[in-house]
Image (cartoon, rainbow, N blue to C red; front, side, top):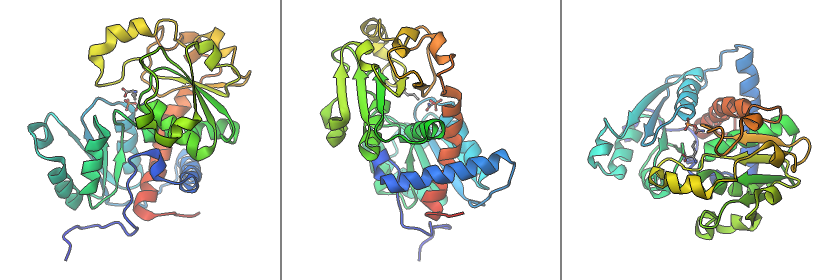
Length: 314
Ligand code: CP
Ligand code: NVA
């Protein structure tokens, strides 16, 4: 007999990469996010995950991811437990496989922010409950869920568009490529040599990518212009070299003028004005960064509902 107090009533699924879900499943999550957001805005109580526990493991810093998961599970009737490497046994070398077996007997859902994707895969391989990727070096699927949902909210559909990515080949770029493959759109990328996409990480989604040296060329005709910090977490030692390499790649008003007249601007945040983006863009009329940040809450509530209860209707 199992000792787990609350096995999920649906088949065990993890969300380690965006393409762990089909386009149809992601569309379901977007529709549920829309409904859940609307009810939340009207102060309607919705507690489908009453007494469920989410454990959140952070090996890197966070503001949005922690807050949106912690507030989100509480708003669904559950509770969150925060662990970090510094003051849990994970920081003293306990194998992730052992941690997974223990935590997944005590909690209903796990969210992990860590370094290599292999760490979260090893954890998931021993977990009895769904595991969510809250950012790894390779992917950031929860952020792209929010970005896709935000684009759809503003523009209706994402199919057939061009997304201009100005920045290095990081967790956000690789997840945009997964999204492009799932939802049939193109990604134009501009980065200096040495910071371009690795086909081994992108896999078949590399077919969606066109790389440019000149950011002015990459943004031409784009429906969405997006960027990120030049130095992702874990790569801080490269900061000075990256600042030099990316000079001239900051998203400016002149760049936005090359995109579609109604192009949107997104940034997963935190942002550095004067580096990867000028204030006139991130604080300007085409920017939807605050909607994008807020939507982390709504899409992740829909994601947690889907993982624990399946395809809820209504
Ligand atoms: N965008 C994002 O994931 O933000 P945090 O690092 O603050 O969680
Ligand atoms: N690419 C960034 C995203 C931060 C939310 C990083 O990994 O640090």
